[in-house]
Length: 321
Image (tube, rainbow, N blue to C red; front, side, top):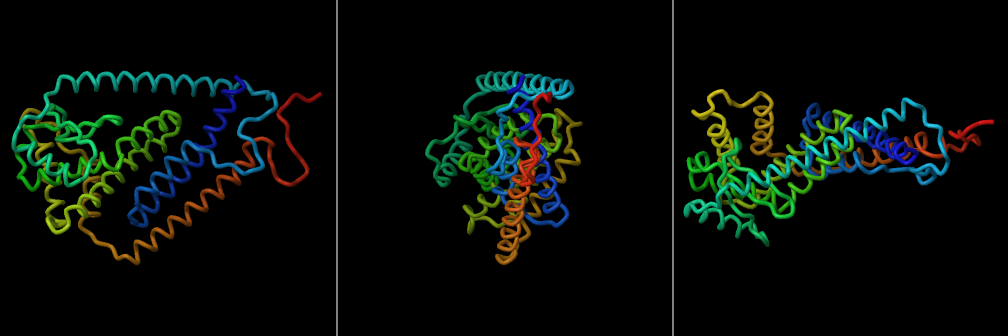
């Protein structure tokens, strides 16, 4: 129980620091209207799982501590919650693998021709297998070690050749830039911090930044072949086909999905100056440095000794005579 209590104390620490970082990120993104790069969101994931400590404190206390009953109960509930979510994740992964086995590898000549041309242009070492599935999403990437691409043939076949190229490039860039791996890691970061709703908000925000990062790299790769407006139009058309279907007339686009798509399209079509991008990067670097300073200072009040200020007084959690 001693070790579990110390680990839970560390989780509370990283959860608090990650929450502060998430609030700052949301403020900069939604209030100041600054486009955040993927690396800044990735730093948020790190803050939620790695404690940045002052050099004069220890993460695990060497002393036997008299944990109060309330903290013991909280530690036990945290462990139980992590266990339940891990089991749920394993079951979900097993069901997904079983579903993929029932899907057919794409044998459509038109789709395969466009897909392999895009894969060659994306310079992937290993081309993901293209499956035909019945998912609600028109196309998606799944898998970390051996990623595959699953598409809804009825939706995809309604797109033009150029629109198909945009869509395939987008999914292949997800694979090339390891977005699925990062999002998978974030899943377990959220399991570790399951009691903190801001960690789940941060994960959803990270997923959006993966999409915008993919959009920007796809447009750079297709520069000279497609304009930002054409690319945005393809996203809107794909969204239209995927939400308005006769088989499921009630499954329209939700308000949240609409807002997220609106943000993506705005970022695609609105160009920013290099000076503004550099100023934004500098501001984000300063914020990141301040977060590291805050984390180290806060650690001196949270870990052994308690606190580690140069006051000549140390607080021990051991038994007093």
